[in-house]
Length: 211
Image 1 (cartoon, rainbow, N blue to C red):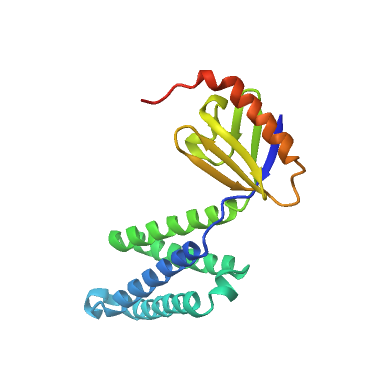
Image 2: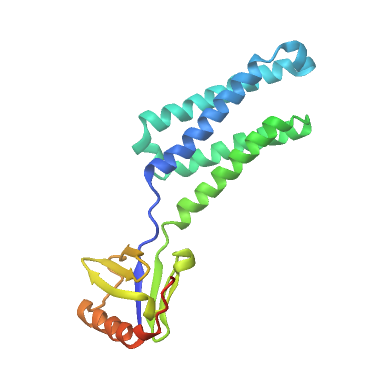
Protein backbone atom coordinates (compact mmCIF):
# COMPACT_ATOMS: atom_id res chain seq x y z
CA UNK A 1 0.00 0.00 0.00
CA UNK A 2 1.12 3.54 -0.77
CA UNK A 3 -0.03 6.81 0.76
CA UNK A 4 0.97 10.06 -0.91
CA UNK A 5 0.40 13.53 0.52
CA UNK A 6 -0.99 16.03 -2.01
CA UNK A 7 -1.22 19.80 -1.94
CA UNK A 8 -4.58 21.28 -1.08
CA UNK A 9 -6.75 22.85 -3.76
CA UNK A 10 -5.26 26.19 -4.62
CA UNK A 11 -7.71 29.05 -4.28
CA UNK A 12 -7.18 31.51 -7.10
CA UNK A 13 -6.22 35.02 -6.01
CA UNK A 14 -8.76 36.59 -8.35
CA UNK A 15 -11.53 34.58 -6.65
CA UNK A 16 -10.54 35.95 -3.23
CA UNK A 17 -10.41 39.49 -4.62
CA UNK A 18 -13.75 38.96 -6.36
CA UNK A 19 -15.53 38.22 -3.09
CA UNK A 20 -14.09 41.37 -1.52
CA UNK A 21 -15.18 43.42 -4.52
CA UNK A 22 -18.69 41.98 -4.28
CA UNK A 23 -18.89 42.98 -0.60
CA UNK A 24 -17.47 46.43 -1.38
CA UNK A 25 -19.90 47.17 -4.21
CA UNK A 26 -22.86 45.88 -2.18
CA UNK A 27 -21.99 48.06 0.81
CA UNK A 28 -21.41 51.04 -1.47
CA UNK A 29 -24.75 50.64 -3.27
CA UNK A 30 -26.79 49.86 -0.14
CA UNK A 31 -25.25 52.78 1.73
CA UNK A 32 -25.84 55.17 -1.16
CA UNK A 33 -29.44 54.03 -1.65
CA UNK A 34 -30.10 54.42 2.09
CA UNK A 35 -28.72 57.94 2.03
CA UNK A 36 -30.76 58.82 -1.08
CA UNK A 37 -34.11 57.72 0.38
CA UNK A 38 -36.20 60.85 1.13
CA UNK A 39 -36.19 61.92 4.77
CA UNK A 40 -39.99 61.82 4.85
CA UNK A 41 -39.86 58.08 4.26
CA UNK A 42 -37.10 57.56 6.82
CA UNK A 43 -39.31 59.36 9.38
CA UNK A 44 -37.77 59.97 12.80
CA UNK A 45 -34.64 57.94 12.17
CA UNK A 46 -33.46 59.85 9.10
CA UNK A 47 -30.40 61.34 10.83
CA UNK A 48 -29.17 57.91 11.88
CA UNK A 49 -29.91 56.37 8.48
CA UNK A 50 -28.21 59.25 6.63
CA UNK A 51 -25.07 58.76 8.73
CA UNK A 52 -25.24 54.97 8.35
CA UNK A 53 -25.72 55.26 4.60
CA UNK A 54 -22.70 57.53 4.19
CA UNK A 55 -20.64 55.31 6.50
CA UNK A 56 -21.41 52.11 4.61
CA UNK A 57 -20.82 53.82 1.27
CA UNK A 58 -17.38 54.96 2.43
CA UNK A 59 -16.62 51.48 3.78
CA UNK A 60 -17.62 49.89 0.48
CA UNK A 61 -15.54 52.42 -1.45
CA UNK A 62 -12.55 51.75 0.83
CA UNK A 63 -12.81 47.99 0.23
CA UNK A 64 -12.93 48.52 -3.54
CA UNK A 65 -9.86 50.80 -3.40
CA UNK A 66 -7.99 48.22 -1.30
CA UNK A 67 -8.83 45.45 -3.79
CA UNK A 68 -7.60 47.54 -6.73
CA UNK A 69 -4.55 49.34 -5.37
CA UNK A 70 -3.42 47.32 -2.31
CA UNK A 71 -4.25 43.78 -3.40
CA UNK A 72 -0.88 42.18 -2.64
CA UNK A 73 -0.32 44.03 0.64
CA UNK A 74 -3.74 43.24 2.14
CA UNK A 75 -5.81 40.71 0.18
CA UNK A 76 -2.86 38.36 -0.29
CA UNK A 77 -1.63 38.67 3.30
CA UNK A 78 -2.81 37.80 6.84
CA UNK A 79 -4.63 41.16 6.82
CA UNK A 80 -7.18 39.46 4.56
CA UNK A 81 -8.77 37.92 7.68
CA UNK A 82 -9.26 41.33 9.33
CA UNK A 83 -10.95 42.62 6.16
CA UNK A 84 -13.26 39.60 6.10
CA UNK A 85 -14.24 40.24 9.73
CA UNK A 86 -14.98 43.90 8.92
CA UNK A 87 -17.21 42.86 6.01
CA UNK A 88 -19.03 40.26 8.13
CA UNK A 89 -19.68 42.73 10.97
CA UNK A 90 -20.97 45.37 8.54
CA UNK A 91 -23.32 42.93 6.79
CA UNK A 92 -24.57 41.40 10.05
CA UNK A 93 -25.51 44.86 11.33
CA UNK A 94 -27.38 45.63 8.08
CA UNK A 95 -29.14 42.26 8.20
CA UNK A 96 -30.16 42.63 11.86
CA UNK A 97 -31.45 46.21 11.46
CA UNK A 98 -33.31 45.35 8.26
CA UNK A 99 -35.05 42.40 9.92
CA UNK A 100 -36.06 44.54 12.91
CA UNK A 101 -37.52 47.16 10.54
CA UNK A 102 -39.05 44.42 8.34
CA UNK A 103 -37.13 45.62 5.28
CA UNK A 104 -36.89 42.25 3.62
CA UNK A 105 -35.21 43.26 0.37
CA UNK A 106 -32.01 44.68 1.95
CA UNK A 107 -32.16 41.84 4.48
CA UNK A 108 -32.11 39.36 1.62
CA UNK A 109 -29.20 41.07 -0.14
CA UNK A 110 -27.11 41.39 3.02
CA UNK A 111 -27.94 37.83 4.13
CA UNK A 112 -26.93 36.34 0.79
CA UNK A 113 -23.69 38.34 0.73
CA UNK A 114 -22.93 37.37 4.33
CA UNK A 115 -23.40 33.69 3.56
CA UNK A 116 -21.20 34.00 0.47
CA UNK A 117 -18.38 35.67 2.40
CA UNK A 118 -18.48 33.08 5.20
CA UNK A 119 -18.41 30.20 2.71
CA UNK A 120 -15.63 31.90 0.73
CA UNK A 121 -13.46 32.27 3.82
CA UNK A 122 -14.13 28.66 4.84
CA UNK A 123 -13.11 27.57 1.35
CA UNK A 124 -9.98 29.72 1.45
CA UNK A 125 -8.85 28.21 4.77
CA UNK A 126 -9.72 24.58 4.11
CA UNK A 127 -8.58 24.61 0.49
CA UNK A 128 -4.99 24.93 1.67
CA UNK A 129 -5.08 21.73 3.74
CA UNK A 130 -3.10 18.79 2.44
CA UNK A 131 -4.93 15.82 0.97
CA UNK A 132 -4.10 12.13 1.04
CA UNK A 133 -4.03 9.70 -1.87
CA UNK A 134 -4.19 6.03 -0.88
CA UNK A 135 -3.29 3.12 -3.18
CA UNK A 136 -4.07 -0.42 -2.02
CA UNK A 137 -5.38 -3.75 -3.30
CA UNK A 138 -8.97 -2.44 -3.46
CA UNK A 139 -8.17 0.57 -5.63
CA UNK A 140 -7.29 4.26 -5.39
CA UNK A 141 -8.80 6.81 -3.01
CA UNK A 142 -7.95 10.49 -3.47
CA UNK A 143 -9.47 13.01 -1.08
CA UNK A 144 -11.24 15.95 -2.63
CA UNK A 145 -12.15 14.56 -6.06
CA UNK A 146 -15.87 14.42 -5.32
CA UNK A 147 -17.59 11.56 -7.13
CA UNK A 148 -14.24 10.39 -8.46
CA UNK A 149 -12.57 10.14 -5.03
CA UNK A 150 -12.69 6.33 -5.26
CA UNK A 151 -11.25 4.77 -8.40
CA UNK A 152 -11.14 1.05 -9.18
CA UNK A 153 -7.95 -0.32 -10.71
CA UNK A 154 -9.85 -1.65 -13.74
CA UNK A 155 -11.04 1.89 -14.56
CA UNK A 156 -7.51 3.30 -14.72
CA UNK A 157 -5.29 3.29 -17.81
CA UNK A 158 -2.05 4.31 -16.12
CA UNK A 159 -0.59 6.17 -13.15
CA UNK A 160 2.57 8.26 -13.25
CA UNK A 161 4.60 9.98 -10.56
CA UNK A 162 6.97 12.49 -12.15
CA UNK A 163 8.37 15.88 -11.14
CA UNK A 164 6.25 16.07 -7.96
CA UNK A 165 3.06 15.55 -9.98
CA UNK A 166 0.75 12.55 -9.63
CA UNK A 167 -1.03 11.74 -12.90
CA UNK A 168 -4.02 9.39 -12.98
CA UNK A 169 -5.26 8.60 -16.48
CA UNK A 170 -8.71 6.95 -16.47
CA UNK A 171 -10.41 4.91 -19.17
CA UNK A 172 -13.37 7.30 -19.29
CA UNK A 173 -11.07 9.98 -20.78
CA UNK A 174 -10.69 11.77 -17.43
CA UNK A 175 -7.19 12.85 -16.47
CA UNK A 176 -6.20 13.98 -12.97
CA UNK A 177 -2.91 15.78 -12.32
CA UNK A 178 -2.23 16.61 -8.69
CA UNK A 179 0.76 18.31 -7.11
CA UNK A 180 2.55 16.50 -4.31
CA UNK A 181 3.16 18.19 -0.97
CA UNK A 182 6.86 18.96 -1.02
CA UNK A 183 9.03 17.54 1.79
CA UNK A 184 6.19 15.21 2.84
CA UNK A 185 6.71 12.29 0.45
CA UNK A 186 9.52 9.77 0.26
CA UNK A 187 8.23 7.57 -2.52
CA UNK A 188 10.35 5.82 -5.11
CA UNK A 189 8.66 6.79 -8.36
CA UNK A 190 9.68 3.70 -10.34
CA UNK A 191 8.62 1.27 -7.62
CA UNK A 192 5.32 3.09 -7.17
CA UNK A 193 4.55 3.08 -10.90
CA UNK A 194 5.40 -0.63 -11.08
CA UNK A 195 3.07 -1.32 -8.13
CA UNK A 196 0.23 0.53 -9.88
CA UNK A 197 0.90 -1.12 -13.24
CA UNK A 198 0.69 -4.60 -11.68
CA UNK A 199 -2.69 -3.85 -10.13
CA UNK A 200 -4.02 -2.23 -13.32
CA UNK A 201 -2.99 -5.25 -15.42
CA UNK A 202 -4.42 -7.69 -12.88
CA UNK A 203 -7.83 -6.00 -12.81
CA UNK A 204 -8.21 -4.72 -16.38
CA UNK A 205 -10.52 -7.63 -17.35
CA UNK A 206 -13.08 -6.32 -14.83
CA UNK A 207 -13.56 -3.03 -16.64
CA UNK A 208 -17.05 -2.35 -17.95
CA UNK A 209 -17.39 0.28 -20.67
CA UNK A 210 -20.13 2.88 -20.20
CA UNK A 211 -21.52 2.44 -23.68
